[in-house]
Image 1 (cartoon, rainbow, N blue to C red):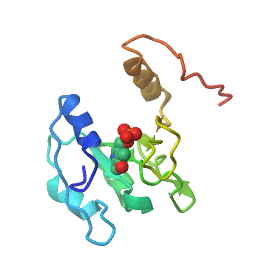
Image 2 (image 1 turned 180 degrees about the vertical axis):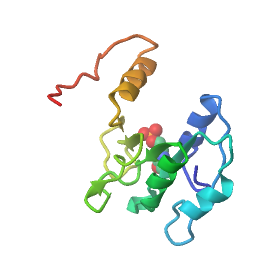
Image 3 (image 1 turned 30 degrees about the vertical axis):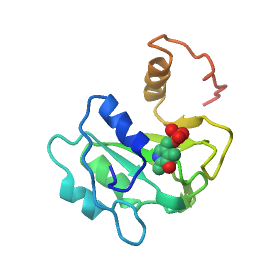
Image 4 (image 1 turned 90 degrees about the horizontal axis):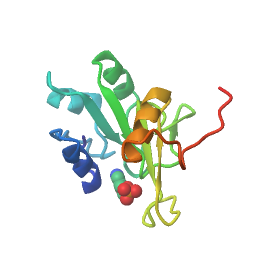
Length: 146
Ligand SMILES: *Cc1c(COP(=O)(O)O)cnc(C)c1O
């Protein structure tokens, strides 16, 4: 995860029983890069949390890097709700993307968030974990024709 981030993201990693490893950010974009990520990756690395800082997408090469090294890619999209690169919205590149609607964010809606994944099994597991372990679609039902 980036050394420049929000404390809530770090707390989520610690609460999951994992050890956060901080990655340097580019001085101009404040985003992690393939180079700074590669400098801290170890055999024990299981996931990358990339933050699209201040509306600037991190370099897309990180998506391929995570695929090549079998790492989950979680996109912290709290600060970049409508950012894109080559017509692909940030938050939809990796395994998970998270948007925040906190009153201090670009897209404020009182509170709340969106978590996205293109993997329906991951979304089902996420829904179960956010409903106290219950297999419930309460509040998360979607009408899909896919
Ligand atoms: C605000 C913020 C979060 C947390 O979002 P909440 O919806 O308040 O939990 C995470 N990451 C970044 C970069 C943020 O700015």
